[in-house]
Image (tube, rainbow, N blue to C red; front, side, top):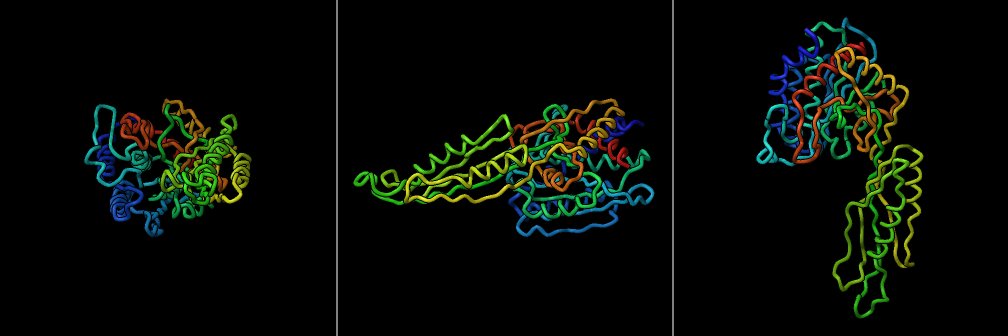
Length: 381
């Protein structure tokens, strides 16, 4: 049987696995829910892939734990492992299932986290399972399940980076591009906060006294937005602001949160200079910037281009074309790319609506992607 035919035959079982996975809610900020979700996943992975050659758990503290599983390749291969990376946390709060239940309507599968990115992991597990059933050679595999991606991967980042050190390639099962593309480049992301300290005064009785933190913040916001360069792939967005106490009081404090996206390290350095160069207009006011670059740039390196070529050839072998895309959003794939290994992201669900109420995956996409992943893993053997 062809891989596509085998995946099509397995679709009902894949959908039932996805149903069970989605109905175990795993919000990033709910430690007990994440523990329950990972425990359920341990059972699913064991059922679909059998016992791992080794298994370890990295405690997540108040965040989700990280599960690291190693599987032998065909014939006891000692080749470098292929890293399979998926996160099990979602942006949806506990109880979302009450108003957004798992459902299948024709080709459309809905439910919290179904597209980002629970279908992706189900596809990866079934790809390995079907490749084994079809007797295809497979490389050694290292599977990482992380529980904090949606909040910046504070616990899992060093685990991911260590896991990449001896890996041949990294495959990330985030959702596909809008046309089913794999993602070969992602922007780097900076998350910053600007705090402004002013001097309070009575705005009516003594309007020239004091130093308005809100005025200073407004000037800074204009300077920050002026620093964007969309032609260079750089966006700067002040998305949250606050400050002041009352309308008749000159504001003594104000703040904002800043999201920055860049396509290369040179632009990141330029934005660092912009942030460092912010100055107060009033001599009695002061500005301070905190925060960091949360994810490095994922550039389309020659190694990633070569991996994409292998994937495209594998896709052609099962009768499909595979396009690539660069996107503004970041993922844990950025960490892998920064370690210098070849990376393909967007191997997960076809569909739309990440982080939105219309989130959905396509059942037909599960068939095609599962077959593609199996073919790609075989090619990497």
